Amino acid sequence: MNTNSNVYTVIYTTIVVILVAALLAFVASKLGPSQEANEKAETVSQVLTAAQFGDKEHWQQIGNAATLAFFAENVLDNAPVVSVAELKALNYRLKAGEDVAIPVYEFNSGVRVIPVYGAGLWGPVWGYIAVDMADGLRIVGAYFDHEGETPGLGGKIKDDPAFRAEFVGEKIDALTEGNPFDIVKGGSPAGDLEDSKVDAISGATMTSKGLEAALDVWLGAYVKSLPAAAEEEEEPSDE
Amino acid sequence: MSKLKETILNPILKGNPITVLVLGICSSLAVTVELKGALVMSLSVIVVTGISSLICSLLRNTIPNRVRIIVQLVVVAMMVILVDQVLKAFEATYAIDKQLSVYIGLIITNCIVMGRIEAFALGNKPIPSLLDGLANGVGYGLILLIVAFFRELLGSGTLFGIPVLTQFGYTGNGLVILPPMALIILGCVIWVHRSIDKDLQEK
Image (cartoon, rainbow over all chains, first blue to last red; front, top):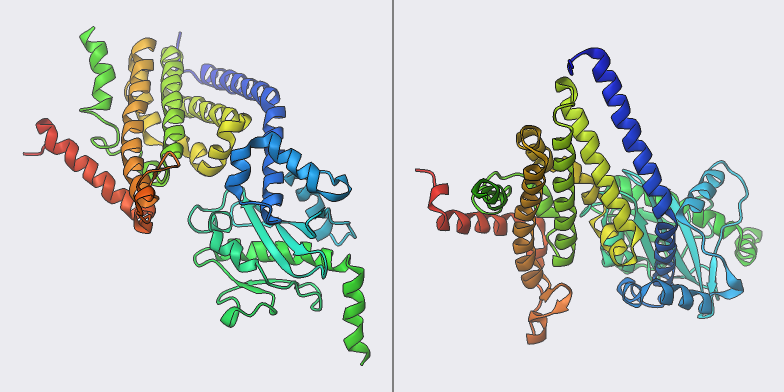
């Protein structure tokens, strides 16, 4: 048989590709449920890490089941876990200007966790910002994750604890509409905690900007949903 | 039998893909910060090179010559996706898969995989091809683990996450964690390998 003829080549490659696609689809559907369970536990562990219940390694050590149980025990109102895919869907609606309620988690420790989602350099970046429930704006913790940012540069939003630590103590700016938080070169001068700014990552401008845009969209929507903040906002303008 | 033995031993020692052929350097620099990650990466590459070589060898007489690289690529890509999916499905390996992030997907660009298929599997019977693929993966993994051993021990003072040097008051050396140190350690491994094996020395 002439394996170099055009017809043979076309038929051969078609069959190979169809077989491979069928196999991959079959495997993906079989492994799907356990992958989703892992992803859910991962999301929960990120939320709990942001909420300062323990560091990321702790949740890994105690395992998926214990992490989910801890979450269920401490979260208020039985808030359901919102997957990253759902955040993505919400992000489209938020960016289209729709008035969407942001899924926040509230914990019995007095911490509220706000999800954020946006586009980094190579793919989505997302994260969780924990604020003090008492005033609703003071950040007590943060955790970020990404799909494919460059390791060592953009990947630092997840891998570098120093980057996350910068958010702690900062305040979300409820007064400037559309710009509740900045990630900029230089960050806060002399550790100013009131200016809603943290230092961007050197060499990862696009990731930093993408994360800042995500914070602006999601925290902006969160600020709007705060009734107390709106009143405070009006007071200075009255005077 | 001796030929089969050589097929297995050559890639691990005299024809080691990293230290002698200098292939697969990029991932050996990137995933050798910790032994755990290096071990999972090694096992993944062993599976991918072994099975891809086997499949390509089985197909070797039917593959149209003009599109052989594309067919090899499809087979390798399939194996990489399968490995990635399986790693994601188990609780024990999920975190490591997240940590290795893009590097699992980048196994497809590992020159060792395509190199062995093109150079060996397309011209040999399935069983030797499988062994050649597996042995090359082992040769790759061995170097990865040696580099990761020194980087984790000196960089973090631990082995497989268990404190070793830190128990004696050792503070992890941040420089060893950084990629340039991987290159230096790898250079040392190549140096030692060459000084032991006289055949590898250039006249």
